[in-house]
Length: 318
Image (cartoon, rainbow, N blue to C red; front, side, top):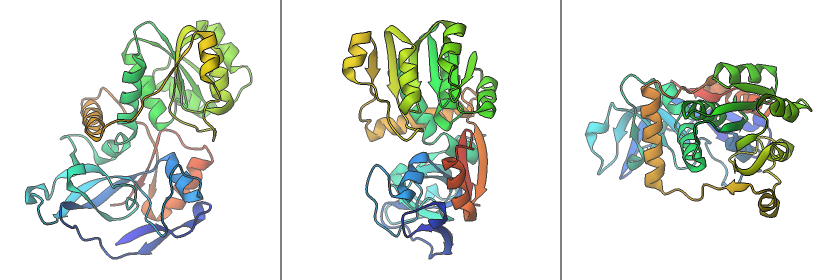
């Protein structure tokens, strides 16, 4: 099979496709013929050697795939063969034509839902649902979504809108601002413009809830838009740094800094199944902005790092 290897840390060019022996499913495992592989921002950090946890090299990156079960190992029900599934890989192995995973991690894809859309919500969908639930979005609130044209942010725009909130989308660049408007945002601003916060104030007066997917200076400015009783939930650091807002500052302003905390595996599975069901029913629409063939995984990483992507980036494998 073909797979993409990471043998040394560095720029996108260190991702190298190569012929690789097919994996063999062991006890309790299933072999997936991969159709699409998920790419996350964290994977670009892992490749660069700046990821949040240590990894051993060499490795095949990739922690989320969708495809068809081709074979099963000892102790696994053979009726799984031929099923369309999505699955976490356990942290590696996803950038490949085939991958062996724990059979217990398989989640069947609902009829009528494409594997590409299923993979697009595998991680981002459950994350968006968890964030929306943790923040308790309420009708009539003014909700600011940073990185609103990203994989998670684009879903948060939809979830907040469906909850009855007035949605303010903040995105980086005119193209992404337009994407956020198309997703249903009531107000959309370019956070690269120095007066973006003032434009938000002119439009809605301030905000009640911030979904912070950028961190850094953008998060600091967004924090300033919150009034007493406001809430802020940080979930990403597209800027390269987490929000520089202390608990003491929040208390002084009467703002609550929300945190999701650890999530049990069974809860993650339930959230993923719900994301798939919501997407199959058309109530949640993942934004797949770009697709790259497996052999061009390096180009996909480069595009993400250049901030030129919108929504989800997928590797097309099959």
